[in-house]
Amino acid sequence: MGATDRPKVCSDLEGVPVITRALDTYTRCGIKHHIVVVGEQADQVAAAVCERFPRTIFAYQFEPLGTGHATRCGASVLEAFGYEGDVMVVAGDKVLEERTVREQLDLFRRSGADFCFMVGAKGDFPSSGRIVEDEAGNVLGNIEVGDIARARLIGQWFEAVQSRPLAGDGVRAEMLEAFSTEAKARRAMPRLWRLLGERALIRADDLRSCFSPDEAIFEFNRQDGEILRFSAEEVETRARHANLTVFFMRMEALRYALEQLAAANAQGEEYLPDAIGVLAGASTSDGRPRFRVVAYEIAQRTDALAFNTLAELEAIRRHYRRRREAASDKR
Image (cartoon, rainbow, N blue to C red; front, side):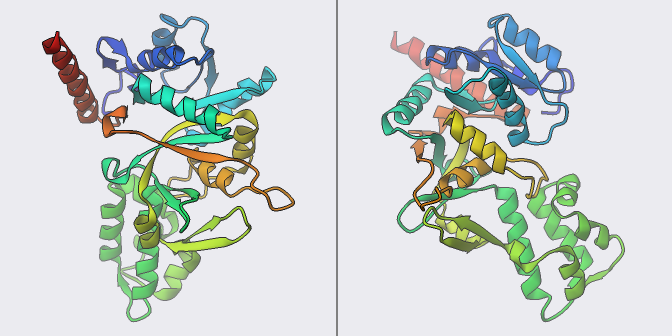
């Protein structure tokens, strides 16, 4: 956010901290208890939340190791209390319409799903993870855009290096274009980044020392046991929807997903959205689907907003300001 004095979730929206507004929405939708995972600047988050929700439970995440790890911190509280009910898992910076939350919760209950996740049109959420489906429209999993970019580069380099060495400056430029910052590029491809500091040219052996060609391919487990393999381009082409990371889950499904999460991705973090593929591909010992997984699609982009920059936050403020003014004009 570019601001060091205030946590993102404490940003003001319509005179209320974003996190407090969110908890208000969820409470009206029937969520009875809240566990808020905090880390740096935890005191400010707790102060904002407890002013309106003094009975909130807080779980501390000592290191920012990803959304999956944060969820693990919150789930450990549920385990300590022996909780076996249903769970909503959502990021603290989400700005959701109450109607949208109610509709997703209703679908979760009506469908008898073990896991219901929110999606939107891919074009409306260019930086959100891609939901991949098979030919029949069955969900296979979620792939983050950073991982798609990483796989695309690896595939291109392995193809190009067969005919000539790669210019180190060109490789570095492609990495920075794909990942936007040096820190992200280094984290996504640490061995290659170090090698670029030593070599003007990257040869086939150099590339193989950093990656396996298989890293250009994504594998998905179907519930019938078949493994499907897609390139980065195929993932992008197949995906019609973007993952918005608003999850309703039965405790058994949450527990199973957390047991399977790993940090094998471009950011080196545990991604909670990996739970989509984990649960969609899980089967019982006799080959039956282990979990029922369904997707809830929002009606319009503004039903589920989030922000990572001050400009994005200001856009949300303008949206709510225009809506308030329109409602006032109707009166």
